[in-house]
Length: 277
Image (cartoon, rainbow, N blue to C red; front, side):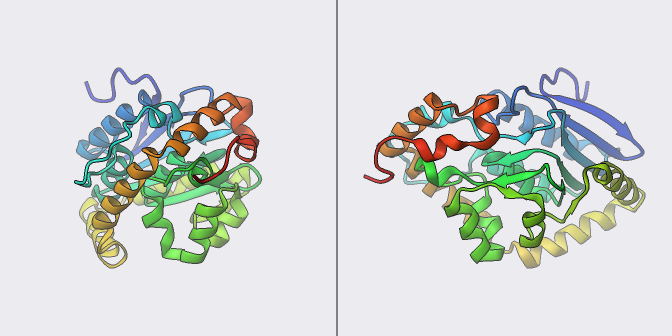
């Protein structure tokens, strides 16, 4: 049965709109358990002809999605194939981008790393003022983002470099000005706005939605697949670094992937050892 046996997602369907709620306490970590369910979710939404719009939201007020699991990254081999291949997070994002229906991220907490990249891959992003935060903190740990952000953020290159190299949190109002998200709204207005827009789009002919997306993507993302392969390869090379592996261990000891540690991510500035070697 479709949408059955999910551990980390809850579903509500209403007139062509799938409201998908991510619920993986404490921080919605995009790890080796959540990622396969995300992949399955994309496949099922894509194949479900009754769904025209998907709204992705979180049951955890403080976190939309924390980031990719550092334990999995730290355990990656130190040798890298010379043949580039896509990352799973990239494939998940590309499925949502390419499917002939609309995906909307409704963000009320922290979206960092892979969580930010999933949000960037959605067709639209709406965030709660004073509550939503965005970041790509990978470089601080010695990594290169590998879920699509190096390709999607450079549409605003200067601001993209600030996000990618600054490794700092971006509040919703700044994210709106940067074009990171569509709009930042007062918290009490976010859910009504997103639900109203999703239901409106769901009333329109599916073929028109699909063709409009394809036309926009043709102009904006003409060479995105090639860029994603480059990103994946560069990210793999960074993961193989001894410096990155050491800093991942330090981050885990300093509070990474704990609820309190992930709220502000102060551990990024307290990692031992030189940032490069």
